[in-house]
Length: 229
Image 1: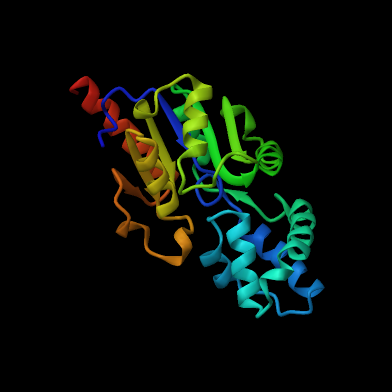
Image 2: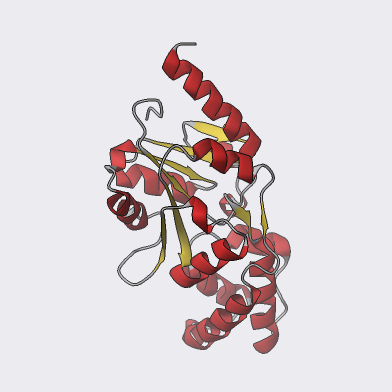
């Protein structure tokens, strides 16, 4: 994958990439646990569990609480209400995000996330990030969550850019596998995210970056390479 070969758009993950939302998940799952008479999961457990979509998160939580799969629908209703209340209350944009988005602003941007569409839109609005993105593609019926490529392909379609001219910015193996499945030009991964509790450097990517200031420097170096300076 070669990011300097005429990238025409960037597809950017939300949780763990743009915004640290771990606190929102901890609060919501803690509320669900209390309502189900179970011990709230630890912050470390939640960090390892998030990122694969809401369905997987709830199934993992039920197993963690030694509850049967038949409790999935009641747990889903509780979690949806709890997360809608927590959404953005404990979240924060990662350091250097504003400058990083400014460095990306010459390309059309899409935010592509496993978070449900309405919650993704609400979170971006709450943190005053929505205007940075031409398109937001969240989880909804008909789109399988990452690591499936569906959401990335939908974002590329809505931007009017071929997938092989899109670069992906994320924080996890899910993002990398989705980018590969979608035929995207490249994927860059942040170390400040979640990646299910595993070291993200073990995931193949064009670059592994500590934070958004590192991305800004990487983009500057990319521009210099492109101009031969």
